[in-house]
Image 1 (cartoon, rainbow, N blue to C red):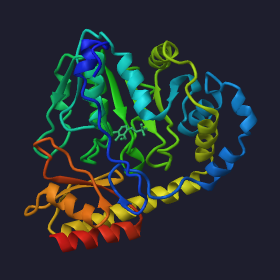
Image 2 (cartoon, rainbow, N blue to C red):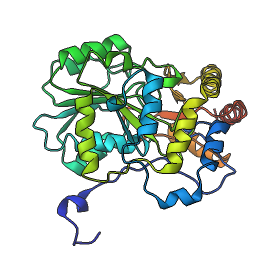
Image 3 (tube, protein in one colour):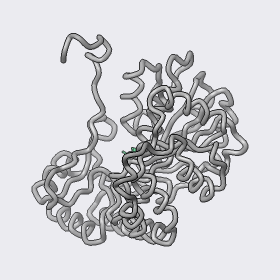
Length: 352
Ligand code: PMP
């Protein structure tokens, strides 16, 4: 690392995402992508964007996408912030917390991007341990002094959801803090906090097109919250780059929301496969946490996660496991097509 960069940059430990292999003959169950392609309407809409139009900058306000999202979710366009994937939306959330005088709270076992961003921006944070059942306990967050709270719902990588009543309790107990609910996986069985938005100006819901909408490669995410919260994020964004969404991504994202039947059908197929996979893993002796996401988190009493992951890899199947001591015996397995799930279960049958 060059000594020309700042001391802070020289100490950074970057976020390491799951492996994105270059070969396509692997069964890829490691980064929670959707096994189904996006709606044909998405392909058609993107093909209809003329190459000539790419000469022109896109709409700096992303009005069409915001209007589409607003209509679908029953909110107003000025209650929506859009970005290149929810990671970018989250980055703007973290930037809006820069130099905040009170700490940010999040679970000790959660999306590993959060502490990475805190370190990059020097944001003070506290990791709150999950309870003995690997759940977020709202009581652990209500009595603490903080400027903001963030967690995924359902949580990652456990897949365990929080009920809306718990989120409402938190919003009431911490009215001075922004409560950011990262709903990356909510469509697979969680309860969205969006209905609470009109009553709580401190709630920000973050969503992505990468999971339930099969568009991880397009990079589209958004946040929904009180106009004053959104205005703050727009200020941060405009200090960085005023053009959030490119023309192709806008066309694809809008079309995805126009094909609701396809969305519902593919989400249901993933949920059905998850339930079947859970049963099959339990029959093999795995403990499987109750997932409301498009992945399961499972451990076997007799085999280490590392050895199982290595055995699967030899059989051309990739899954994820983590180094954190409380979860290092768990495999996180994304839900694939029914055929992929069957191959995974067949491989684990041989390995256990
Ligand atoms: N939040 C959570 C909890 C995630 O697991 C992910 C995906 N790794 C993201 C946000 C980011 O997704 P994207 O940037 O693709 O929208």
